[in-house]
View 1 (cartoon, protein in one colour):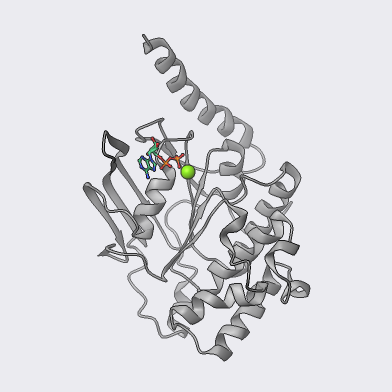
View 2 (tube, rainbow, N blue to C red; view 1 turned 180 degrees about the vertical axis):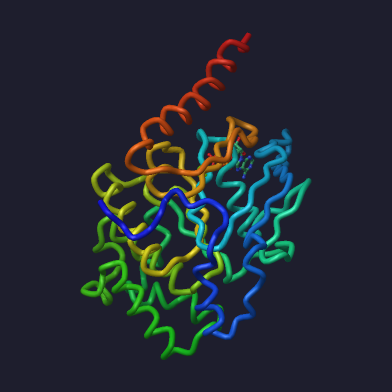
Amino acid sequence: MARGFDTQASPPRPDPLRSEREVRGVAASDPSTPLLEVEGVTLQYKTKQHLVTATYRVGFEVHRGDRFILLGPSGCGKSSLLKGVGGFMMPVEGSIRLNGRAIERPGPDRMMVFQEFDQLLPWKTVKQNVMFPMLASRRCSAREATERALAYIAKVGLDKFCDVYPHMLSGGMKQRVAIARAMAMEPEILLMDEPFAALDALTRRKMQDELLQLWDDIRFTMLFVTHSIEEAIIVGNRILVLSPHPGQVKAELNSVRGEGAEALQRRIRGMLFAEAVERAGAAP
Ligand code: ADP
Ligand code: MG
């Protein structure tokens, strides 16, 4: 599976989006500063009875072109961190900055892809679904939205399904549409919350490869959440390992593929399993 990119990328990092940003006339920020800076972030939910701490003082940096993975067991606060970056949830402690600016609200520069197959609008066709955020955010004219929609639908291999409604698509195809829809917005960062977790194993594997091919083609930045160690190693170049509830950083690792991947998988499993054993031992 030779691919033209290095999954062991470590600093210094090139800025693959820079030339494109300059072509687009977007002020290219200093490539040495991270795109996303998460510092000491504690996230909490206040319910009537409880105060739930979802993450405790979590910190990490995502650079342009990273495929950055948040990995940890269910309930460790991965989705909450994505919500924080998405601007749907404010930290009670710490800060989240994109391009040096504190995130205060949701915005079209951060598009989210979810696990659920029902994230598409059922009364709109594939093409209309992909066009919808571009039009609603007034980012594009109708003509540009159409052009971009067709281009990104082709990139996920669904050109023949432009005028089909979501109920006629398989789960994998629906996820491809959701990915095309998010990517067509050309966000600064793509937020993906276990996008393949509800797919069968074969389709999941295929989608992981397709996502890597898309990355090879477009070099976008993504923050990808998963509870699968295997998926983290396949999809990511950087992996943040989180402890169980409340999520705290256990380690930040460079991913490796091919030789070394198995050892890395064992190492991460050891980290997560050790925690489980400690907890089991501590139980009354
Ligand atoms: P993950 O995505 O890693 O499975 P979440 O971020 O969804 O974890 O949840 C982290 C913790 O926050 C869990 O204990 C969960 O029960 C709690 N939590 C998540 N959403 C809410 C909510 N809306 N209200 C109260 N508690 C929540
Ligand atoms: Mg989650």
